[in-house]
Length: 262
Image (cartoon, rainbow, N blue to C red):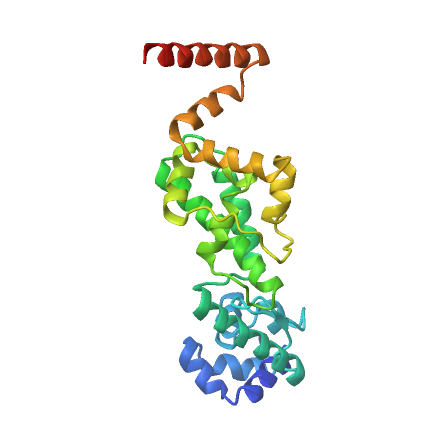
């Protein structure tokens, strides 16, 4: 185990004295470790591992790879080619953060998706929390998209959200009130995406799935954007065919009466 520590000292051109000064570990601890008299306790191993940006498992010789919490790549810091590849990926990650504002590693992304999908099942959430949770969920999905496309993409996060809001799978996660807040903030983008992602189908595929043609999709959008019509649409979703026919017949009669009165 000390051999790995010694290799890290050489790799990063630092001394045990400097490590001890930065971590608060006494020099005698490193001397006893080197001479095989004793090994640092777990809490001290954690301090040493954090100093070098590695895990305790790596420092203990249980694995030869470390995980970069930023860019999400696994690499061996003592392997020059491996580290060179990591630095190349890390540089792309840094540029993505500057350009897009964030880019989560895949472990954090997976954790956030699980956590926020679970939280969004609570239908009594205040609107601001539900909106925040859905935005964080989409950040996780957008991070996946960036990593899958070499840390770059054709449009920013706001555009990504506006495209996701078209999808029924997203609408169903929150209430109509929260969805309206999101729509007001991001808008809804119906432009077809020329790329295919592994997150969900493209906008065009969603249109094909839910609407038989563009005219039907246009009518559906007009209904969705009209608050009164949307109320009727939502009310009809759980109604029987007989109830819907009755409602249509009643509205038709009212319209005829209105035209007659005019």
